[in-house]
Image (tube, rainbow over the protein chains, first blue to last red):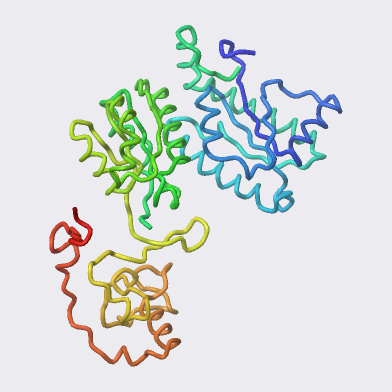
Length: 153
Length: 222
């Protein structure tokens, strides 16, 4: 998949202790879900800063999925609550910048939640497909022949 | 510290619209501590402006830099090259920092990226509150260390006003009544008798009413 086709690209920031394990389990269990996500493992969703999400969109991501532990079960106690408020702030910022806030979503998954993880990915792909390609990505495509843009592929 | 908050992205886009090469210049002092204009916020604001530029076809080219302190010429020197390359500077410092940059580069448009709001402290994580109005004649010693000018909505020097409800200010019910705090504090430090003294009207000449202020220390001048 590359920036020149119409398939949405979704960056998924997954917590090492839950969502990443759930994604791993989904793979081991041979669960089918859309191949549109690019997983970035994080030690905890509390490590994720607002600029991580902004950089992903800036680089042409059509959507960003933040997957953390279920509320109350963060390995570091409150990391997923921090992530939740940062995601909400980033959604407002994206709206100010002219992007649909629905392109950024936070979900909570347990390490055993492979089915749930696959379902969240399907929902996210559906949401982003309905919204269409990110307008940021369109410009990156236009520039792609001129210079190295660092677009997500 | 000086507390400030970010202007909205549409406001910033409107301000920057006539320019192409823009430097977002952060400050590593107060606005870093209040999470509004330091290196991380410069990165966030720059990303948002790049996204807005692409969404609205504005062709901004945004560079980022954060220096230790924008209100000090010694630190401004570290930004000279980046500022000279840019068509305009969006400073995420307080109003003093923005003006220091504008004075140092008289031919460069310099804009404020933040609204400088007050002198305050971090009350709890994510909450800053105003504590000082920089009025120029400190009266804190008379009020148990609680400033009636800043923390009383009516700036009463001889309070209380009588309008507080359950120790909360009647103007801002989310804030405590300053005079309740003053009374409690003076009682705790056995200085309640201070409240028997009537404070005469304050001379506001030392505040902004006397025009722009300057501090001159002959012992430090060269």
